[in-house]
Image 1 (cartoon, rainbow, N blue to C red):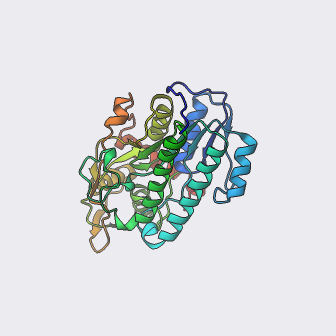
Image 2: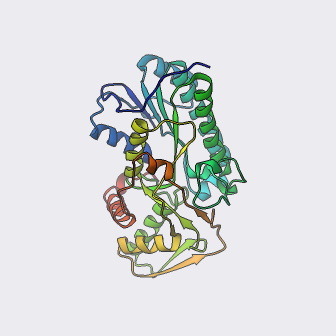
Image 3: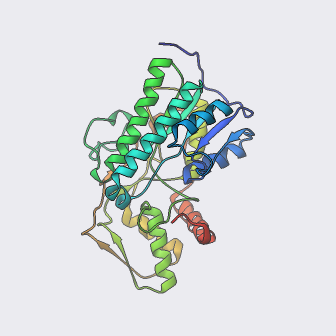
Length: 323
């Protein structure tokens, strides 16, 4: 095994940094954060120019541009319906993206890399709040197990690179995310954007009732994507270790309470009902963010303010929404 001496510290703002997936919600937030921090050699490519499932194209890109830092935020993502009805898409495409980017980064000697996963990697009935060592200790939530397995594979590949080559690559596992650039599709979105769209359309149409999936009782932790972007840069500059790092707020809310906040932000005054014939998904998923806090980071965007801002963004970008 090769060893590389490494101590976390400020990244070189003039070094080439590849943000994979810069047009998605997470990647675009990280891209904005890096620009704001003065990084002036950001490497970004839309899928039309660089398909990350095309292995030769990925290796050619890395060989040509030689990034020194990589943030792997590219992924196929979706909500319960999309994950449960198209599991092949979620496991196949995500594995291809991850293996291609991580292999190319290793081949070209990328020194610092951050792989972004998801809190769905943890067992469905993990003890709450979920600590990083809960990984691989129980069965996954079946509605998104294919996506979760792909992300677990990415974590293990990062750990394997650390063991075999000594490179200071790290992984971050964010909780449920929301914010500008989210997917507001009625069939493939996550819970918060789905609620925003549903309540906004009901308010516009004057519908007296909004019906949401499930019982409303499951608990969800929500993190604004700008907080995640800030945490990612913080980890790149302040953390090194083999275990994935949870990124969240350390606070959760029932989906019913979240729906109430959304309805208020929208201005909807009708009735909310719950369709209990539809699945709830994981009953609770609260992350223990002790590792991240110990490194000196705290979230800054409150749930109410974050939802108000996201509703405003949604209404201002109707023509260009990802649907």
